[in-house]
Amino acid sequence: MSGLFDIDEEEEKETPSASFEYQEGKKNGFKNLVNESFTAMQTSFDYLLKTIENNPDRIIFGVDKIIILGKLATYSIPLEGLIQRMRNPYAGGTGLNSTTATFKGKLDGKEASVCIQPDHQNVANLPGCDVLDSYFLMLLNDDKFIQQERHSPLRHALLNLYGLSASPASAAFKEYLNASMEATYIPEESAVEIKGTNGWKWKMSDGNPLVPGYTIWFKKPRQRAWKKVVQDTTEFEYGYHYDDVFSILELLSDSPRVLVEDETYASDGYFRKMVAPHYSPLEKRIIADEKDARESAES
Image (cartoon, rainbow, N blue to C red):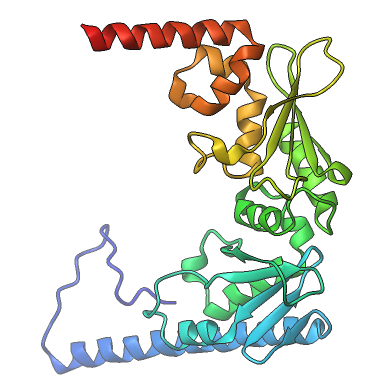
């Protein structure tokens, strides 16, 4: 688009005028800008239609939604929200509406909300249908985009959907967890193993249907059998923070070091208390902290 209303500070500042010629020129310039945006929108819509027509078995229409059959899951996008956003971009906030993910090949059953933004840095300057086209292509190739660092909402959504059990997303999760955190994902056990500090190893699992959170085990150096230390991570003091696989793995990868050496808020109080009986430096730290707290209260 032209820079009709842009001001170049290096050039002489434009002075507005009430003259007919000036006003007519500005009006025509505005009209040209709007026409250019309509043309760009039509062109982008043609590309969007081409994407839909090139994938007739994977982009389909329900009663009131567009359904994308991804390689890892099924995604349902409400039509009303899309049309409303295109009809009036000033209504309903910014960005794309939330998409619903369900099991691959299914429309009912367990759902997860997916709030993904298109993979464009200059998205604000793109026609709406270009953004939508990019979004559709991303969901069609979810197995590739799930590996990209910036698409954590997609990873979180599919982990919320499938958990750690074997699923169509298992191979993608295994690749990502190994590459990003050096963690070993074992879908047949609904578990992830990761190395901690001080020679410790950790395992977390969501395989027990009676446990709403994750169960955690550890192995010390030269210890052969796993020792359960946390039955349910929903008992964590900061459960709102440690409520997903990635945040818990980050904590485990720096444990037990972080439990002893860092400030208490750098980990979780409940987790520290559960680990303390199995690690004397942590037990001593907790005893010392409690003593300091009592002395401070008495003084």
